[in-house]
Amino acid sequence: MFGLFKKKPKEPTAPKLLDLNNNPIVEGSVVKSLRYDLGECTVELDGLEYFYVSKKNGERVSYTKMVDAITENQKVLLLTEEKE
Image 1 (cartoon, rainbow, N blue to C red):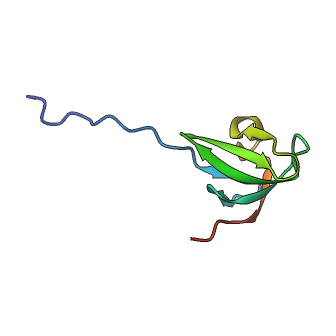
Image 2 (cartoon, rainbow, N blue to C red):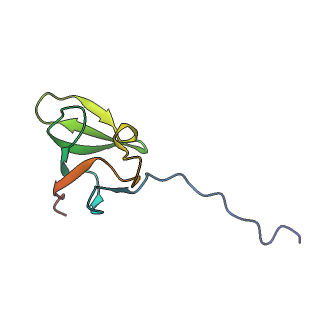
């Protein structure tokens, strides 16, 4: 009715990530990767996509490759969170 109640388009946001123990993962978190032999990684946000960057060899892997099929959480374990 006259365009008064139009829905506003939603702005795209970065996905919310959880580790295998359901702990939230945010940019700057340190995690232990359970795939791709990455070891300890830091979480980086590039645009709207998260990346795991290995401390051991600098390899960079997208969060989409770390999804656990059963729980839909990430195949990582949270070690520390970023201090705010």
